[in-house]
Length: 290
Image 1 (tube, rainbow, N blue to C red):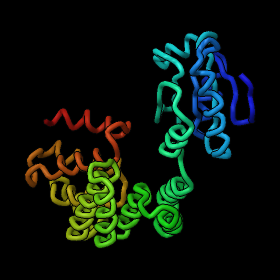
Image 2 (cartoon, helix red, strand yellow):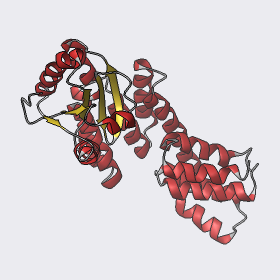
Image 3 (cartoon, one colour):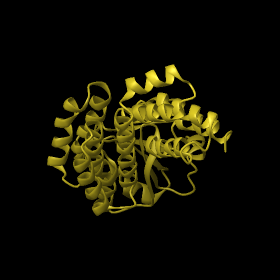
């Protein structure tokens, strides 16, 4: 097949991990599984190339000849061709089979390729973790200016509100997410943020993290202080320390405050993400005290 631009290239078994898996951590990679004998493949190829070229570097196209690279076809369970998979950060994030018309290919890419608003949200989350809310706010505002309904931007704004203890702002962004899609992952996560805001209230009522630490140091059996300290840490997104502190409450008395420490840990599991290694570590430990 012809290679009309630098965003399109042929790849095989030998260079797939570098050209596709590693590269997809920098830019999404569209993978076209095809073969020379396949008529629909020959029809689809130029349309994929055109759609990718229109995005001007936001996505790249790789072509895999399934006849020459059966191992890759088996690895990705290709049952019929043409088969197209979009990889981002090493994972398949979208796929389709068959020769779609150009308009549907464009829509597929719009649905999956990060937009300019996505880039602002990603930068905001990085700044939130490294420099704090003030540094992240401008990125969130730019994302919402580009796309007022952007779920990721509203979730990022909700995280800013949590950091600042702004319950009204948090509720506004939760409402925006629920109006858009109440069953979305972003809406569910935002609701967990509201629960974490409640942890901050527990922390404040107990006198703050320093007071809680002093109380625990003075009396390690003070489970109210230890639980409040776990809430303080959770409210500040110090998740490992929060989970360890809450787990210690569970170890000492699983039923303390009607199982509040266990419930708080479950909330954090949902907030962090069930596939996260940290969550997996503490889920296994918590199960011991079921």
